Structures are given as structure tokens and as C-alpha cells.
Length: 179
Image 1 (cartoon, rainbow, N blue to C red):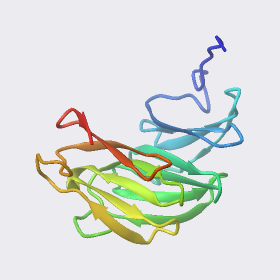
Image 2: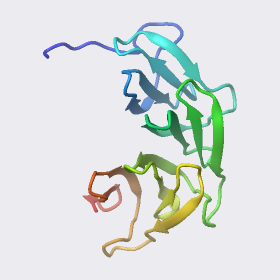
Image 3: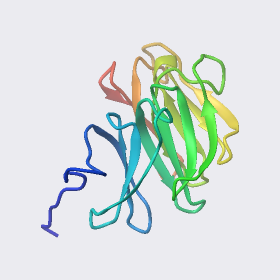
Image 4: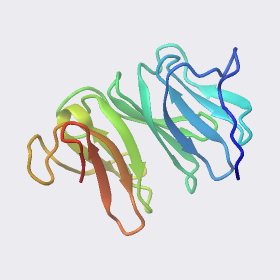
């Protein structure tokens, strides 16, 4: 519409310092992860600061973020603490998945998250060279990928998306490609 405005640029509460991830809820609220503040900031569709999620020590490096409007959930990946945390859209903590490690369900510097049409959660587990897939309640369904340079293998997977036909798209920063 030719209209441009800034969100989170006003000094004080809600000012963004190092924003990394963004997701928009069906009601227009904008959720932004900020790795400098270690919080998730929530803004109205007009850019007004509404509230924040996170207290000192809750996040170390929040990055990827996704919203499931059907379930009313917000998913936040924390690369520094090696977990994915699920919240209500108002910031109520629901559950946490992960912790540092190589075992199934553990993470090593996860960076991003996406959802499919069934509400399954896809987490890019960057330093374990894989994508782990969980059901909407956080139960591990499967994982895909490993270190390598063949199709289906990764060097530094970072971004992820799914489409309505069930395809999974993964951006690999090590190979400068999209699989």
C-alpha cells in the first residue's frame, strides 16, 4: 500500500536492539525475537509495543519463532540454551523441548522453526546437521539429515519453511543452497 513505518525504534521499553526472528499472528500482533535483550517483544499491527516475553535467564539467544494460530501457540527457538519453548500467545509457558546434546530430541545450536498444516514443529538443529520434527505437544516424530555434501545432508542448516503440499525447504548456509 505504499505505507512504511518502523516498529521497535522508539527509546524505552520495547526498543529493539538486535532483532532476529519475526512472526505475525492472525490478529495482527507482531512477535519479534531480540538476541540483545533476550526477549520476545509483542507489538500491535500498528507497531505499538504491547508486552514482552522473557525474564532474566529465560533466554540466552532467542532466534527462530513461529505461531500456530489454531492452537494459540508461539514457538521460540533459543540457540544459546539449545531448546525450543512453547508459549500461549500471551506469553504463558507451556512446555520446553531439548537441552544440549546429540541424542534424539536434544539440540546443538538450533536456529529456526517452522510449522506444517497439521501443527507439527520442524526445528533446524544446526550443529547436529539435521531437522527434528515434533508433534504439536512436543513429542519427537522423526529427524532428517546428517553431516555431508549429498542431497539430504547438511553443512550449516539455518532456515526452514513448509508449504501446503507437505514440502520442507531448508536453507544451508555452508553450501549456499536450498534443499
